[in-house]
Length: 229
Image 1 (cartoon, rainbow, N blue to C red):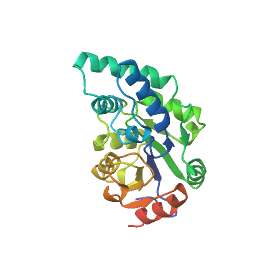
Image 2: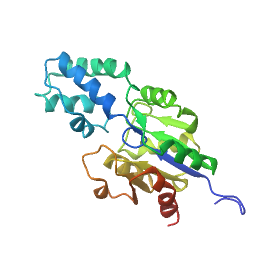
Image 3: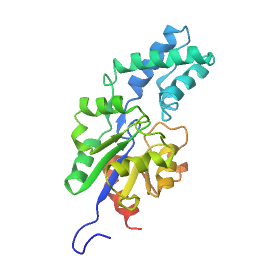
Image 4: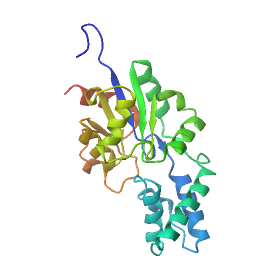
């Protein structure tokens, strides 16, 4: 319990792709460069959006399934490596923060909220994107899919972020766009807010989140709602 007269620490843990930034155009471009190289038909950006959220290997595997099938393990590993090369050359060509994200998170930070990233994207690219878009200083901790031994939906991913911040689940809220985010948050004992503009194949209203928002302008009210329970 906080000492009398002091506000409790408040922590907002954010997913990255589909929540904080719209990275689908660059993700789809890298996927299609890979598919072209291996002689596969290209996919629409809309199709790729629904493949995002479980890390790079799953994204590449899903793209290969959708375009003709997964090759043997060695060829799949080569495809994953080639995807990394394509994507890392263009991570921020078209990727942008969602409208209102920077302003809202900056306002929350100015009122005492501590901010962190918990993404299944590898940590290096996550940090690169945040820095390139001028967002790096907002976040005290950045955990990617390769930062810990587990990743979302395993709640250990969220616990790892909280440990980095020397914080407890009772002090934090998760903001995401996918079932992985909600499952990881609830498994770690956090309330979850889902944003409806994300990528996951499961509609936001079916995720089981504690609150839904359509835009970042609605985030402060949603935080007040889930932290007042």
